[in-house]
Amino acid sequence: MEARKPVFETVVRPHRSLNAFGFRLLMGVLITANGAFGALMAARGAWPVTGFMGLDVLAVYIAFRLSYAQACAFERITIADSQFVVSQVDARGRVKEWRCPSYWANVGYDDDAEDHGILTVRSRGQEIEVGSFLHAEERSRLACQLREALHRARGYGAAG
Image 1 (cartoon, rainbow, N blue to C red):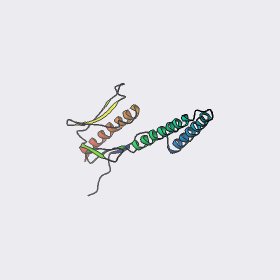
Image 2 (image 1 turned 60 degrees about the vertical axis):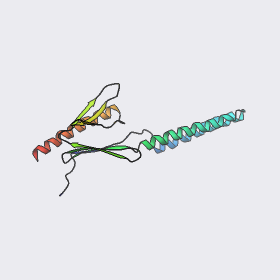
Image 3 (image 1 turned 90 degrees about the horizontal axis):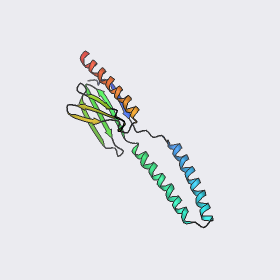
């Protein structure tokens, strides 16, 4: 039996504004600036400052590495064969999957300014939040895409 092509499929990833080249450039500038300032302080007799300048660079490096590790997380959203499937993969590779019949799925988007919008999918008393790491505008756009895809999926089910 041949599997049908999904009505909708997308992978949502956290946005990182600084690519690998930008990261290396930033670290180079930071090391150079801190090294020059540390050398100036050492020449003036304040040599302990150089150690703190090194800790400053190390802290920035660790923060960026942790941020890039979190970027490995993603969500795969698929609407196919009358199923709505959300697979959430965290930064460690653990998968959490949520399924429901696409006919009963309901996409909700609460654009409350305080929360910057919450995108949820509900079905028969169950609910999952989707795209929590996206910007509010991206979540709103994804909500519209999901609603349209569900509408198409329900149309295909009635015609098939």
